[in-house]
View 1 (cartoon, rainbow, N blue to C red):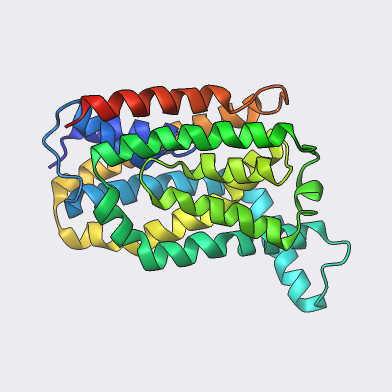
View 2: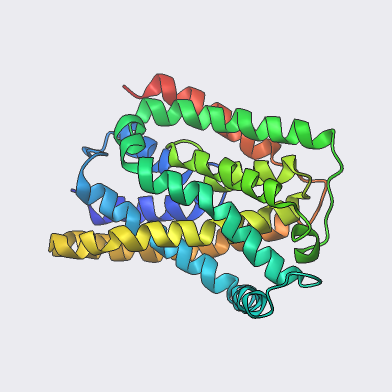
Length: 282
């Protein structure tokens, strides 16, 4: 059973690591092991707590991009009415997000429980966290040999359907604890030619419905549990996650406005922490 203090710590960690390209589920699995908390990562109560903090993060992302989502949803509806995407970059961006959501949505629905049952343990999380670092370094290296373009939604909307689907496939790596949703989506965006700023925006928009839908499907289990202490811990942890998610998205959107900045510091962090944790956890 999580204590309130542990819930606060994990909520803060969730808020930061879900949006930073360093894997929230990987950190939520590693921290209890490194701090020797008596927590079973397979315990339904622990997973229900994580679902609540994920929902808080998705809600913050949705509210942060509220005006964008309203514009995108209107664009999708407009394209259905006119049956055309010609000269409508907003509508095309909306459909690109739908196309990019399909891989993670389908794979998550079919395989997520099986993947978590196999890999949600500290040593696996540490190993895949290091692999996440390798992935990010690889994306930066591949990007150097391509023309990275910037220009906001109009340029993002010019991605082909195949490239949008590829970014969605990359996002699916986050089903494995240790791989970051933001990191894998960002990597996919860089590989298909987006700038860091545009790849981050696309990654955040792409992740919002996936995180939110997955959390909404499982959130009722938290209330069915009837454990008032768990509900309090989940509520406080979610508030912490929401606050730090907001601070994280503000920081990252500002950080990548300077095109010379790269994912290398985050990749190095994942490699160092992942390798070190692999040898420290039992």
